[in-house]
Amino acid sequence: MAKKSYYITTFGCQMNVSDSERIASMLSSLDYVPASNLEDADLALVNMCSVRQTAVDRVHGLAKKFREIREKNKKFTAILTGCVLKKDSQKLCKIFDYVIDVREIKDLAKFLGSKSFDSIDHYLQIAPAHQSKFSANVPIMTGCNNFCTYCVVPYTRNRETSRPAKEIVAEITKLVKKGYKEIWLLGQNVNSYHGLILSKKGWTSFSELLEMIEEIPGEFWVRFTSSHPKDFNEKVIKTTASCKKVTPYLNLPVQSGDNAILKKMNRRYKVSDYKALIKKARKEIPNLCLSTDIIVGFPGETQKQFENTAKLFREVGYDMAYINKYSPRPGTAAEKLNDNVSKEEKKNREKILTEILKETALENNKKIVGKETVVLIDSKTNDGWLGKNDQYKTVKIKSNGQKKDLVGKFVNVKITKAMEWALEGEIK
Ligand code: SF4
Image (cartoon, rainbow, N blue to C red; front, side, top):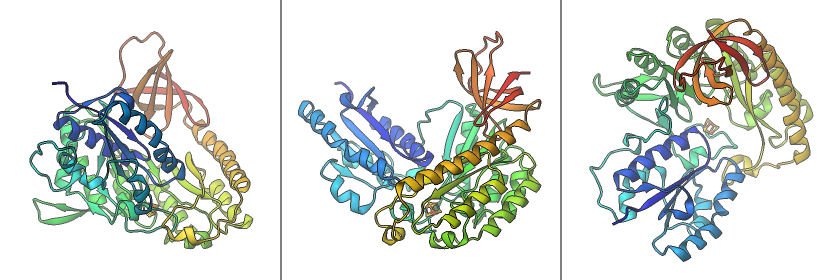
């Protein structure tokens, strides 16, 4: 009998990508095989993101496609999981056979009428089917307790849960033995990691976890995301600086450069606190590459308040930034605020910040020209390779006749050219 096939559609962040890797592994243990496209699948699994309305609309947009597939394949099943708001779930129940909490993916057998395997306590214990052979996502915690007023995560992923440190260390040890070179520690707020050390019957903080991972033998890099400025402290800065495997890349979302807006967002730090953190981090980690997340056009954001953000942007001199135009999300506290900044103005503010970012990123990249950097190669291009250095900067490398397959390898590269969003270099 032919095996049943599945097709996973993933929306959203690295955490959702990581969850989909666990879903894929769970399905293969239930004897499902991957389908090359949705139309040919017996099971569609959609891993949803509710952070932006566009992703929610795309999930609603699947209704017609599912109807067509069901006409041809009466046994077709569609399951929705991921970050699903209760409000959306009521409507989406009409499109999907099941809408399940991401934590329930450990019980997928129950929904598919399959024989279940040994039960596990938490879905993060499922061994993931990693998409990459050299870079792996390792969730260390999930959920969030912060309730930023614009964000749905505490409602869709619930409160914070940290994985036991021993379990994380064991997973990374296995990955490194298999040859993985880049480990991304994931969580909505990694700095508030508070995991059990089973052997010592105690608790470990994020910086202690980094120190434990540093002890794992092998040549690999450790990166982490996401950090909240209220929990990113001096201890984590010092650990990042002293642990050789922890790379000098930090994404520290500031969201706004204005104190009144930060208060409205419930971010629980002031611009001065943020600047002090950056100063300390740059002092301890001299080659630090810094990125941030920003929301422009938050309800009530005046021109002056936006200018404070633009001022902070110039002062900090980011290498990268993820600039988002505010859009209200159902169920959040900010939904009740008057979304009074016009679409045009939001676009204009996004453009202004992008222009500043282009200048600061290029300025920072120019300082690296002539220097040597280690690059982990991601892919082959027509005339060379693409990779990321320890600072998470994209590096384009000319092949210069090199024929060896370098994908997934560390190489020493001399930087020859700086651009806004990338560097160019030659293998040393
Ligand atoms: S810290 Fe704020 S923005 Fe980040 S996941 Fe939690 S509530 Fe959302």
